[in-house]
Amino acid sequence: MSRAERVPPVGLLPRQSDRRNISGNWLRSISGDWPSAVCSALEWEAVVVRVVVAEARGSTPREPGTCMVVGLERVIGTIGGGHLEWEATQFAREIASHAGTRNAACALRLVLASQLGQCCGGVVELWLERFTRADLPLLRNASQAARSGQPVLMASALADGRVTRRVVRAGTPAFLPPKLRPVAEALLGIDSRERVHLSRAGRAVQGASEEEDGMLLERLDAASTSLWLYGAGHVGQALVRALAELPIAVTWIDSRADIFPRALPDNVRAVHTQAAVQMAAVAPPGVRHLVMTHDHGLDYELCRAILQHDDFSWLGLIGSASKGARFRSRLRKDGVADTVLRRLVCPIGVDGVEGKAPGVIAIAVAAQILQTMSDALEIGETASRVQSRARATAQLATQAPTQAPLKAPAQAAAEASCEADPHALASCQAESCSSCGASSRGAHA
Figure (spheres, rainbow, N blue to C red):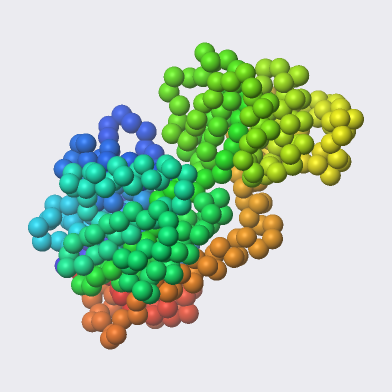
């Protein structure tokens, strides 16, 4: 049966039995530490398959690096829903249920418009890899390495139907093929902060169809922005909840130990200290600071300590415009230069959101922080430099086929669809079917 024949007709939803999830729990994306998510999935199923968006061209539901873990009964995470996720889930379950006859990993390239009937119109390449409980020691080691704060890479090589995985922390990965060593070195050299909003650029794929060997290289450490939040009152707690599923690592500081909730999101580290000002003075460069303590005097001392070092990315202060004016006047008298004072943001929150309820303020401030993350990459050439380097490494890692492969039925249908309908071709952001991948690899039978 061809790949296209397993795709549900356009406009129809998958059967309810194909949309399994842990009953009663929230649907959540997998962010950052995916090895830990696979470990959790292996607690309730003996075999699971991880599906990761390895490459995306044109308009696609999710960016490269997005992944989900599929078992025979349950699914963790999402790669964007719709027919793409339905198709990936079915194929993953085939790999999981035929462990003796299926390769342990493969790549699957799908043209969303012509093959799946999705209006996104882009092209997605998925990497699917099977895990069993025998992989738990490696997964735990990878999870620990991902949380170390240092650049770390996972190299997954498919050969003779088997996957060999290695965690690369630093240095030249000598075990890699010579053509892939510069790729790994480049990926390890991309700072995790630069990868935020760059579609997790640290990723490259070589080969890996159902019929050929291949390799996936990807950064494991989370692409996140560091936010130091001073104050655990009502607004602080509402903000932490709003940031729980965003690529932001929160250091939450307060002098009151009993005010922190017992259960914290995975991206939050609570610090109980009476020396918040001293901590702020020695914060790592590039941190974003947000001051909202219960004490205006403490707010002022924190702002002064942060501004005097002038190595931060952003500083926000909760309060009215008059509070901001009073603070700037005092800070100026204390010797803070006007050029630095202009970086103090008060009031905080995006324009157009009215209301003083903690939840309202939290949403407005969370949106503002996301804006600062985007703005930071629009200044200078950081974004274009990282994106260009990622494109170059991906091209270097891609192995051109030595001869034109036979066309599967779904592949031929996709190519014919593009030839017959110029709108389908335009929607996949390519000049020809060959350049978008429909005829160079097609769908795997």
